[in-house]
Image (cartoon, rainbow, N blue to C red; front, side):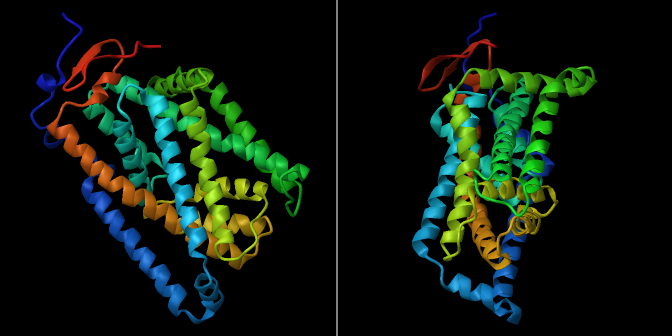
Length: 359
């Protein structure tokens, strides 16, 4: 049998009608979550505007610097671009930049309105890749690798931030152990993830996790700039945006070590099942910043502004990107298929594109 084929002849007439989005990331759930997030935003705005005891917050917001807030938005765009880079580096450099950007932004848009700690975006990306022609095993392995690589960036910077706080190099914390404990926990997490792959390989379906760990280590060893720079930039642009949100309201920026540690610990609040992570991420960030010596009002103002930008920009970019991508998947041959290992594929308008060999 020939290892060349034409995508448009093999694609079902209407794949999106034949297989709708999974329930956990369905269009109806995205719309419902978006409405809930919008309602919560209105509640927060109303509370800040009307509740008598929040006068200090109103004064801080009234004194905001538009220029610094615009700069914070630019930093968030940098974080989104970094996410696209690491997605492309992990999954496939053979698809077009347009496709990589649309999938990456669609994942970010899903993450901004769903409440599953980032898993919603990964599930959406896996569905898109499978509809584009990639094998399930490849998607599963690379999805685990992608999650581990982006998580490894967080834990690595948690180690650096914690050590920097404990030693005083990256600013001070109320106690040295507030830096040492997060650093030790992060080291344990990294070591456990790497060392557990032999164990999970023996547990039936958990073997895909072991394969994903091996894949992540292999991808990191390649030194691919898209992966290294993308994973670091995805987080660091976000942390910088949080710092700029302090400056935007005339408040002192916390030390770099405090921002790193508080950011990563606070993000754990996103695991709470509330659309957009409302309350969980915000409370986690504010509470952690206060523990590390930041004034409560300063922290609240900066975090509220940070979270507003973090929710708005990925949603505004990502949800239209998902709509465009779904239309392309339905109506035309797609270059996602060029990423499936082991064969070549003929893409309409591009000719024959060699698929990468399995590695």
